[in-house]
Amino acid sequence: MRTKRVIATAIAGLLNLFINHSAAATVVETERHQVQLNTIAEGLEFPWGMAFLPDGSLLVTERAGNLRQLTLNGDISAPIAGVPKVVAQGQGGLLDVVLDPDYANNQFIYLSYAEPAPAGANGSSTAVARAKFDGNQLSDVKVLFSASPKWASNHHFGSRLVFSADGDYLFITLGDRGNRRDDAQALDNHNGKVLRIHKDGRVPIDNPFVNQPGAAKEIWSWGHRNVQGAALHPDTGELWTNEHGPKGGDEINIARAGANYGWPIATFGINYDNSIISPLTAAPRTEQPHYYWLPSIAVSNMLFYSGDAFPAWQGDLLVTALRGSVVARLDLDGERIMHEERIFGELNARLRDIEQGPDGHLYLLTDERNGKLIQVKPAN
Image (cartoon, rainbow, N blue to C red; front, side, top):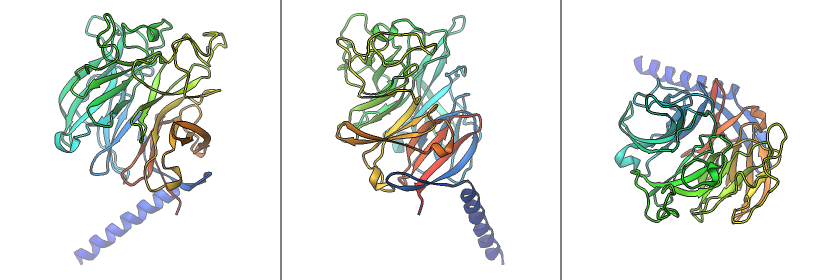
């Protein structure tokens, strides 16, 4: 009898899970696939980044400073202990999370966050810490990088973390902190830059400015406004990024060593009060955007799809948008962007992050006080 009760309880639980997910599901017709949008979990406070663990669950950051573990059954853990202190103001807080390429052996995760200035000083900047996750809490927390200078601003922290294809290097994307100075065009600071370090925090000896006096040695590329999305191209292994323009001029760039991407001396955007930032959309010795949006859709994260669940999307670049409340699907022919389709507007939500799961399905985080984890799967 006990066995029968256990089986009945399990079946009832699966039925309730199916009913709950079906009630929250939306079927969407796109140009190439009919998909189903399922709300897996909700109640996250402005979630920002996520990373899949080997057991199929996820680590999810909340901007207020909490790191949580989620299952695809919708279970959300209590806050995981050991997260560094963060400045959760404005756009700052606990930001991205990634696993070490050798996580199965070392259990290291990496967090980016807005780090407060030392006691007695003002301001904050983006920092990156490494920690060991034992399934319950963080330990052996080590700050690998802290951006300089600390700045009294709550804007433009970046920040995505991406490992190189060989797993030896960690790319860190940053913003210009919204300070309206020319920091992004100066090499003596980290603002408005993409950085490259070894995964233990050391500076690579072949970074482009490592031997230039007065330059920040971690710099990989410069002249960026606020880079909040990044992914490696599956064929070339190069780092592609997206960054917020002001009013107009969101960009996709291929972040190459030593390249200057022009902000703020050249931009397709204008100020929010409609005044001109620069009369130039191109400038000598700077790179043009690989792709840009007018008006802005407020890009967040992005990925190159490589799974089997959506075969007609393989190799496409998928970009989440906040103000646009869509995923922009970009057809690629090599590096050339051939066509854009905007999908998932039915969610009517600011979309902060996108990840591909081990099952080949897509997962989205909504940027709201009652943030959701949404699964995208084939409708059949």
